[in-house]
Amino acid sequence: MPRIEKAERLLGIQFNFTIGTTAGASYVSKFTISAGYNFVWELTQAVKWNASGVPDSILNPSIRDVFVNIRDEYTSEDMFVNPVSLALVTGQGAYQYVLPRPYVFRGGTTITVTVIDAYGGAEGFNLQIVLLGYKIYGAIPKWFSKNIKQSI
Image 1: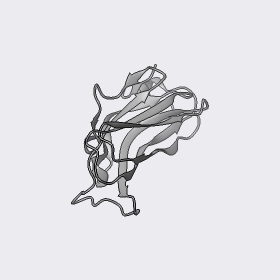
Image 2: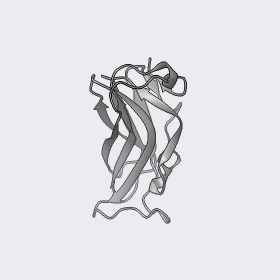
Image 3: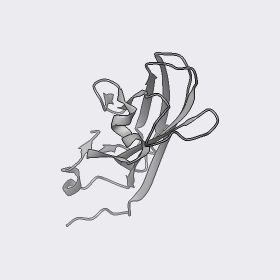
Image 4: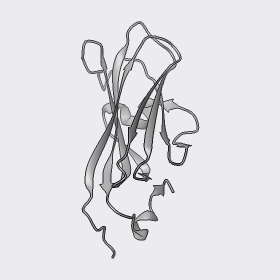
């Protein structure tokens, strides 16, 4: 069985947002992957906390939901046809959301995360979304690439 030339490295890519009170507001954060490796995205997790720094309860959330979309700028492909509820794609913080099939972002790609606050509210809050996976140095082996979606 072929092997990857250099060892994989775990990686968490953080996207931080300060959500205001305006209904319909959009917030955008970007991260550019180094050209020296590909990023294999496997899990997504998020945490929300209020303006005082108190994390939202996992079992009884009180901070409003927002909608999110993730875009691969290399392919100009959105991960979702329309923005989806944050709770659906992050496991609400209780559990990491495991992608049904890993996705590879090519080295040099910019990942854009857009958050839409559809409802607005009396108070703003902070949000962190993390894409978890690992770096692969060099070319993606053919035996590995059969089971993943690549940005080719």
